[in-house]
Length: 472
Image (cartoon, rainbow, N blue to C red; front, side, top):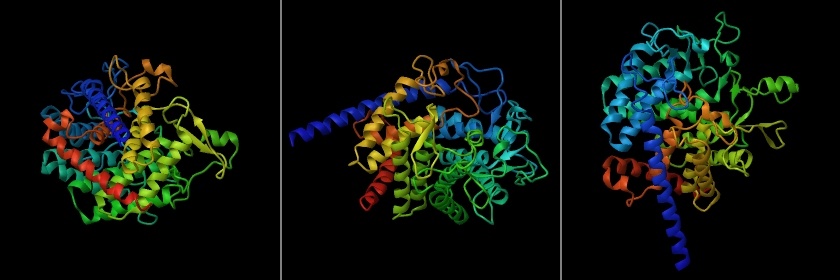
């Protein structure tokens, strides 16, 4: 009994130590680096591009995804720290998002604008729209409304939801088209309209990425707007991702024909297969990120006995651990491939990008709480945090490198901020982990009533799934 008590005390002390490390890193090596440096006081919104020492670069295009992610991240940080500064940083993004990125003529959000809010040639999106980008607008606006309670913010979130449903939803085969013209018309390879964009190779396919981030966005929106149509669409997305997009082995198919036939080059020539890895591979980071997002969606929908979602989510993380975890150095590899569906998943990309490592941190700790008897999750969580500390966090200049220095030493000189990199993945992971690790003895808990509420919500979420886990 005494030995067991000592073990428990050791684990508690270890959790507190990591919690305080994370809080310090979150505050000093992430948030205080980005904000308020990222605030564009001249033209509105948030700056995009920063060099390796976090100095703003000359080109400052603005993508709806990044702008909305900044709104979301600062809204959550404002709640987390009960901070007026972050409250203001989050509100700051609203005017640019809706005055410059929302299409006043046809509705929907442009994928990209220049710094001033006009046409940009970056990525050759021009006036095109993407379901993915509009999903993040909903995500950010819902979080901002939850923070401020301002009706105009909720109204715009609802407008965005309705635009997606009216222009992107496939009434025949379900799911959502990703590629949309300015006028709000989906296009594919047979359309008269031809895209010049850098993602044009994906035109005509449905995809997991826009699907999972719509799930995420609609979950956030349903938290503040209990609408029947939103409930149906969110529930439908959950079922689609869980039962169709996810392979029974526990990984996401990436792209699909309109009728949800997976796109696969497994039986193509070696040259054709390698040329199309972008469309057909195992993305471990998306898999365990989706596991978390599905649990969030099910919980928000109030599905009380959703064992199927929990079982699938667990299978996704377990598959990533078995096939994508680096047993020598730690961290998750970026990509794998099943050259034979019944064979082994082989690693085809050994790099370890920042966002996937952050999502792995969150998923490992979450599942260690839901399945405490399975020690592998907590053990790998500890390894993952050590790996991130060693190879991804820039302890000198702040922020995270885009890729692990273990695999890509040149990342130390690469830009820290871009249209695809801000404070969303790692910010969410750190906030979630701090909430999961903290207790009433933790200083933030004692001094911040708002954090206590957030912590209690996190505990209820875990308790819900932990109780169901007994029946798996």
